[in-house]
Structures are given as structure tokens and as C-alpha cells.
Image (cartoon, rainbow, N blue to C red; front, side):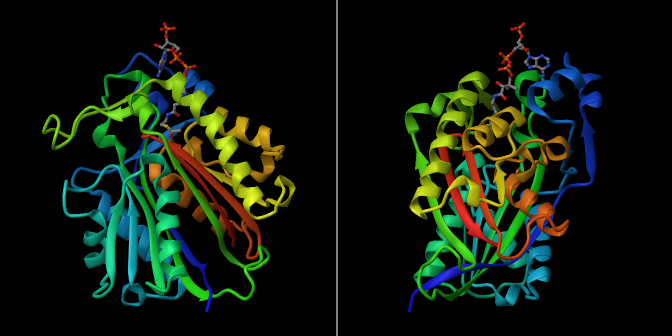
Length: 325
Ligand code: ACO
């Protein structure tokens, strides 16, 4: 029997504290106008002291499960994407497993930075298709505020904290066609030669410290527009679909100029793109599920609609997913 993964619920969680551009400009040589004009960001959320990535993830997971009419005991797989785990080991996913009351199955993390949610979705979708699990939680959760150099205006203004989650159920695939609901396909790429344009300058086996995010912004920008345009075309071609078939583009929220450039290359009107960056900033692996949650909750994304997700992050890593909601 062929199986596919159906979206059963979606949830998001943002920490309470809001850090505006103006508040940043009080302690850094920057301005609200510069940040908005170059990135589209107006404010970001910052996790409270003692509020961990696993806490944000568990709140988002609980909301997604509630929407699906399920509880932790119904889940047999958690794949959690994060570049900011609570601890070096074990995986943040197992802390979430315990927190949501899931007593069976398996939970693990994936590390693909800002592309992490797409990579986690692919891993969970593959497991469901193979019958290795029946219900999966796919989570993107980050506390990037903890790995930012708050004296580096070129990076610290870009990121925020948050978490988002999807519940997927394995269902019978009738005939493999693109008009059925569920995950249609996922497309993953990486190129380790581009490590140095976006990385964290620490870690257990190098410095023994957590380190800070370092980035060559212009080169990341260039690579992002190029690879994201390629991978969305790859996803459409794999399903015999055209850009005009897409109801919603849900991009990783790194920069409005990157989002607009990819939308333009696809020929997709701006009204069909979900953009949350103004209020969330770049929440890395959490940005796509947070955007999905917002657009599903306010009624923009409707059951049966075609949703195209794309992301690029450190590694470099990049990917896309097509989902019929
Ligand atoms: N406030 C004011 N001035 C600033 C700031 C700031 N926060 N940051 C940098 N500047 C200054 C620079 O010092 C530089 O000054 P100089 O000309 O006197 O040297 C000037 O602004 C221009 O700097 P650039 O880095 O060339 O500015 P650019 O137009 O490239 O914008 C940005 C920088 C926003 C980082 C852009 O390159 C970008 O968005 N890149 C994509 C990176 C990204 O999104 N990364 C997220 C992680 S990867 C991902 O998620 C896809």
C-alpha cells in the first residue's frame, strides 16, 4: 500500500518579549529605516532568560496537536530542526518528546540551519511513506538570540526567536497524483564548499564555546536568490505543475528582497506570498512553520490549496517542499 503524509494540524509559538528596531538603535549604530529598507524587519521576539528552544518547541507542538485533535500519546515520530539546541546532546527533540507526554516512538534533531524545517519535513515524510511511523510532529525551533554577537550590527539585527510545528498523518495514497492532499514532494541540496559565508565560530570540538554567527551578507544574498529560484522550479517540474498552479508561496523569512526576487522569477504576484518577517525577523528553522500557522489560522491557506515552501541556510543548505494543504 502506498502512503503519503497529510497535514493534520499546525501551531506556532513566539516568546513574549518584543525587541523593536528602535530599541536596537539605542544601543547600536543602526536605525529603524536602515533595517526596514534593507531587510523588511521591524521587530523580533527574544526568549526570556531560562526559556529554552525545547520550551518554544513544546508550546508550538501542543498547539499543532490541539488543532489536529490529538495529544502527545498519538505521536510516534518527532523530527525537530534547530541550530540552537538546548544542550550539545541529547537532541532537543527528546526533551520535547518528554514534555508533550509522548512515551513511545522516536525523536531526533536535524541540523540544516535556516533550511532545517524543509529537511525535517523531508525526513518525516519519508518515514511516513515507508510506514516507519503513523503520526509525526515536524518542528522548527530556534533561540538565535543566544548565538548573536550583539555588537555586530551586520548580523544581530536580522534574527529572532520562535517555534512552529506541523502534525503529519500517514494516509493511503490512491494514485500518486498531485491533486490529492498531503506532501507531494521535497527537494534537498547542500554545498559544503560555501561553509565560510555563513557559520557559527564555535562548537564543542573546535573552541569549546557556543560561538557567534558570522556571515558574508552580500554573498549569502546572491546564493539565496540563485539556488531558491532553481529549487522551486525543480519542485514544480517534479510534479508537472506550473507557477500559476501555486496558491501560496511560503518562503523562509530572511529578507523581503530575497523573497520578492524569488517571487518575481516565478512570476507569482506578491499577494500570493506569505510574509511575516516584519514582526518575526529571521527565526531560522522556525520561520516557515510560523508563517504557515499564521496564514492557516487567518484563513488565507485553505484546505486543498497548493503551498510551495522554500529555504536556504548555512552549509550552504537549501530546499523546497510542495504540499497540498
Ligand atoms: N545598520 C546600519 N548600517 C549597517 C548595518 C545596520 N544594521 N549593517 C551593516 N551596515 C552598513 C555596513 O557597515 C556597510 O557600511 P559601509 O558601506 O560604510 O561599509 C553598509 O551598511 C552596507 O553593508 P552591506 O553588508 O553591503 O549591506 P547590504 O545591502 O548587503 O545589506 C544585508 C546587508 C541586509 C545583511 C544583506 O546583505 C542581506 O540580507 N543578505 C542576506 C543575508 C541573510 O538574509 N542572512 C540570513 C541568514 S541566511 C538565510 O536565512 C537566507
